[in-house]
Image 1 (cartoon, one colour):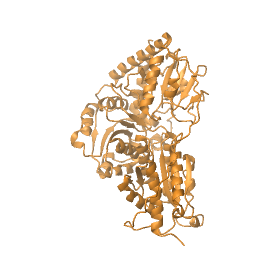
Image 2 (spheres, helix red, strand yellow; image 1 turned 60 degrees about the horizontal axis):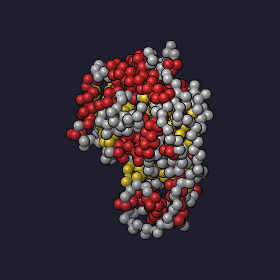
Image 3 (cartoon, one colour; image 1 turned 180 degrees about the vertical axis):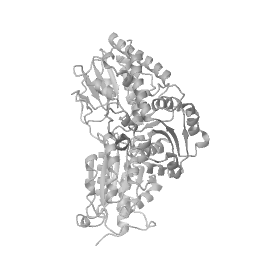
Image 4 (cartoon, helix red, strand yellow; image 1 turned 135 degrees about the horizontal axis):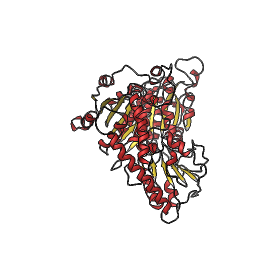
Length: 577
């Protein structure tokens, strides 16, 4: 005898209730019939503190969830129906995996009797996300209504533990539902069971704390994009380390460190144009993943003979694409710094810091002269001036490809810290706008800097305007195609470059945004930039959840400008040192 529809609803609501007892507060729901018990359960749980978002596009929904999870580090549930809807979650699952972000994918499925027999919308969806997830968990194969309250609690406990484990990441719960699926929304809610207290503490192995490096010798610190737990603890430990050692810090634009009172070097990508002239350390400390700069990576490849150490924050997976065989301590920087012996910086370390800072100062003055606020919009100038003109309290998300690299190389020095994020886990352009919407929802405000293809790739992200309670300002760098490919060294003879690589699209981004109710305007020159940004930030725009500012650039000319800046920047920064 099959279940009643209310049995399915009660099971779904009990599962969501168990997750809420553990701390779940955000759920993104996609439409579907098989997932109807989960949808109705989420609706009923809204009155108990569950924030419910809805999306017609599963890929967009999953990336919105990634953005929410990135904003505060807590798990987000994404609910879909069965079939190809589950496959749409894979890109976000990959990004969440590589970025160590906690997501709970709750996918409805057919019961076992309808699997592998040609039944409609019955696929091997339980296998779709498995390579990218910390765990695949399933309810009873013949229907979730057969699960006891204790089993549902255990399922939630295990999923939560895996989601927030070391490293954190996505978990897939594939849940079979037998028909009938559609209960009456006015059916009485089940009595809340007495919940047992689950032990959800993640047991971490005891890690040795070998220093690996000598704090009394000259060293160099390289910090990649943000991928850590408590930012305040990390920053405090880094300050203490620099005070003790005087080691200069090469900080990625998305590290969250630029603007802090530290010996920061932001122009390393330009200074390394001629690496033979760069002041060399006698040891190297790498924190987290590597920055995007290929010149930096090539330079570090030559550090085979000096002591090196990689420190990550609760990330035991290997972070050594250079194959340096450097030891990795994933217990976190704060723990490592606490083990340092007392002392003071050596003369050699102070000299190395001074050499780097002097080169940085010369380079930044030169960039200020070359990238003035006048003339047509160029991508290096926009990276420099947007960073300088935007208020520091507005966080920035950098889309992958050119934007993240330009801010790394040309972003202006800041007088105060700004939160800058990028998604360098898988480094794709999937879901860029939806990711940004998720962060804006959680943080209340965000500026997205994005290229035209990345924005078009996720045009369904504009639909979040209807639900967004935060504000998302989109700065579009429109170079009519994939500008990153213009910077690649490749033979162009008999090559249809635009067709094969750049792929410009005949779409008016302002018209597309306007069709979704998003106001926009053009910025046609650098002289117009201050007024254009002021328009986006103006009080009269406060009721607009999304705004678009389009800046047209020339990708071929900008590629030549970058080459000139590399040559002249190195000559100014290090040529006479």
